[in-house]
Image 1: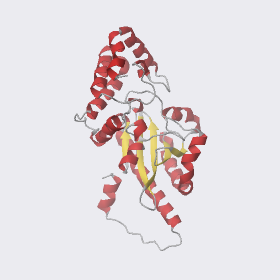
Image 2: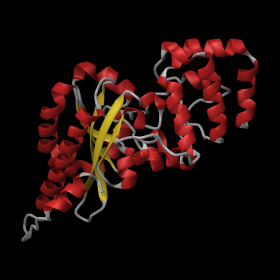
Image 3: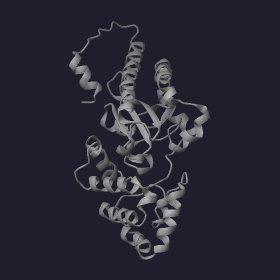
Image 4: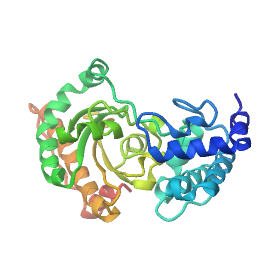
Length: 299
């Protein structure tokens, strides 16, 4: 059904606005409060960003207090996806926002929880990386020891964005699972839009996605730092990610975890390379310090 047809009943019926606002205020897990807009359930194609903007603006006018920055974020995502200049702090992810909207059709206001694979599905994703996962255990453990007290979870993901190994507090497992930052979580950019894992896979560089830099408004409390792990053939095979669910976390504080994540990813690469060629002579060349700084910054 065309997007304009699904929006018509909501525009014409003020009562449905009230129902929408009440559902949004409750913040139910696993279902989108925006499902009351027509039949938008599950993955939705973003057919017309201007229509999204009109919808968000209309709801914002009626209940700006209940939506807060949610509506503002969704509206800005739509405008950037249409080619408008991004606000400061979003420039680095603007191309990912545009991909998420126009290439993948990700719904920025869909409140559905990220998919978490069951054990049987997870096994198929994990098996091809068994050797690398085994090799990376020590480096993952060391990274988690550093970030654990700050409430972070460490995810080791395959090249499709599936978390095949993790470290996190078991007592907070339900919370992490709700946010998708747990074993089996699927974080490809095509599914979740701009995020520290999926966008790292697409752009093949270390990056930090802090709160409102995420494409989906649902993820505005998340801060994620992802670093690519390249195999012995130079192709991206995994992503090491450190994520936190803390709306009070500052961007500067989270940036420190980005550097730690990149350092640990490089250690995993080197360890795995040496293990694969332990019978060979290996010549190590140290790059100039300036080149190291540029790589760590993702440039």
